[in-house]
Amino acid sequence: GEDVEQSLFLSVREGDSSVINCTYTDSSSTYLYWYKQEPGAGLQLLTYIFSNMDMKQDQRLTVLLNKKDKHLSLRIADTQTGDSAIYFCAERSDYKLSFGAGTTVTVRA
Amino acid sequence: ETGVTQTPRHLVMGMTNKKSLKCEQHLGHNAMYWYKQSAKKPLELMFVYSLEERVENNSVPSRFSPECPNSSHLFLHLHTLQPEDSALYLCASSQDSFNQPQHFGDGTRLSIL
Image (cartoon, rainbow over all chains, first blue to last red; front, side):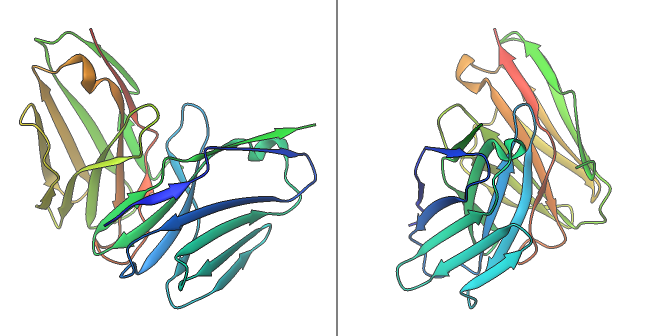
């Protein structure tokens, strides 16, 4: 199966860290991705991780992968108002990307 | 991101009209994709083209007809659409169809009257 699940909403205070979680089912996934979608825009690639890695850091973003539990998370440090958006987790198997339904992150002052 | 450009950004059409969505990528990629994004549903992959050949048709109704004349351009021809086809249609491209990440355009918001 190719189900990807995420929680639908996350509210975080400006300056705090955000953690968005995702679970997937396809153990043959080669890459896992995080995309960001702002209102009226398409999906912006934030970061991705190869399935043989367990962590990747890119400036304020940290991706953790627990392949045994098929769990992926995205941590955003020092969350800013510009981080308010919908975040999509996606897994790749061959040429297919399977997306979760997206987590709406709201940053409050 | 301006690497993948979609036109028009918005389209309103009746059920009997024929229209086309256009996607152009300036990234030198070899694979292109059409996705449908409906409210409260995960993105649905519709079509995949690799080196201008269709490699995936994900059970899409025949009222949607893709065309890939070259590796930089992708079209989605629409005819006799239904109200449930109203959605955001996203185009994406990647260097290859297996390993490299997909880069998305800003989409065409389609409304069927």
